[in-house]
Length: 190
Image (tube, rainbow, N blue to C red; front, side, top):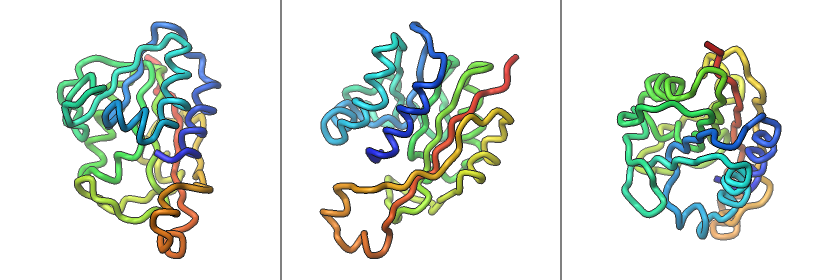
């Protein structure tokens, strides 16, 4: 997750009426070290503010590692039997082959009137983890893929400055500016 993307998520979530005790599912969360040391802006901008508001966060990932609360197949969410008030799925959809099934399962785990945050690279190089399908949707394509009528925010965020550019200067020539499609939507009520 990029710094600008994490700031977009933070601003988007600040406007939601989230109450203490509500539950959050973070799909494809990676491990605690990644969220707090490799990319500390993830915890600082996304999860710390949610914890400060009294929300309970469940980090779900395919690998059993420190900081992963629930080990699941992130493409089918098999093993996620509960529903959550807020579901975060960041930079995962470009790594799944059957996006429609993954979206169906994400919609399933959001409570009625709950919210879903989706982010997907819009302009970014291929990055196998373990695969990259090349899915690079516009904000409008994300809205259509989700299929919910209550879209609160949908936009493409431009990544202004990232470490990756300094490590690989040729990325800037070919891929800059990087862009991330971001979506916040509310599930229709019961």
